[in-house]
Length: 267
Ligand code: GLP
Image (cartoon, rainbow, N blue to C red):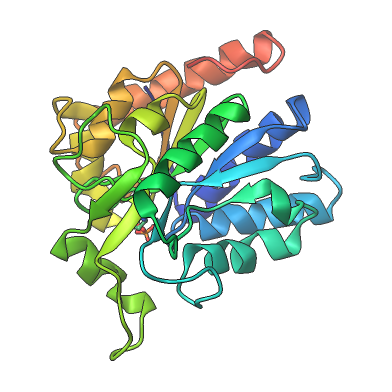
């Protein structure tokens, strides 16, 4: 696992976006795994700028989102499909028919999960998966106790997650308590995983993810088993890590080595 500690949320967004731009330039038909939540928004803004500056094109890109609330349709303002259209897809040249979000209004959600898995498989798998992290270290909607080998399925949300996400819903609005989410096993099969976290309220989740044991009770800790996982965090989210100086030194050494190798990334 590579841990990159940066000054603030702006630097985190820029660093994350640069990795995605590089991936798409290297393989224009990349399959992206995308995430929602407030953390990735600034990175999506960076991707939109890169597109507008003609630095990158999404015309051949395919995408799969991590999750969607169960019980709301695509066109619901709080659906993750609406979020993705608003924060990214409406502003770049991606073909929306190449973008997949789990169907929150599926008549048969269990079957829909299997179909989602098959679609990922049929595309040759996800090249690079973006993740945020919940305060309880959930990734996608894989709440604590999720099996580390889990696949796309219906999950019940914890009260903590429901409360954290209540800010996106009006006071009397229906807020789903269930979601369809890629499993941890699905996420681990992505060739590269990029997790972004900013702010002090993510510090405990980050120290558990990076320096705690690998356990289903800290879903993001499963990334310790991935061969190309990059955790990009600001100083606030890194505040509980034990050896921050070592991570910073390692990043400097990696950058030096990468430059000398023509910008090939060292995991
Ligand atoms: C939701 C999403 C997660 C996201 C998390 C944290 O629960 N399903 O994918 O990582 O929120 O969101 P935020 O970035 O707003 O803290």
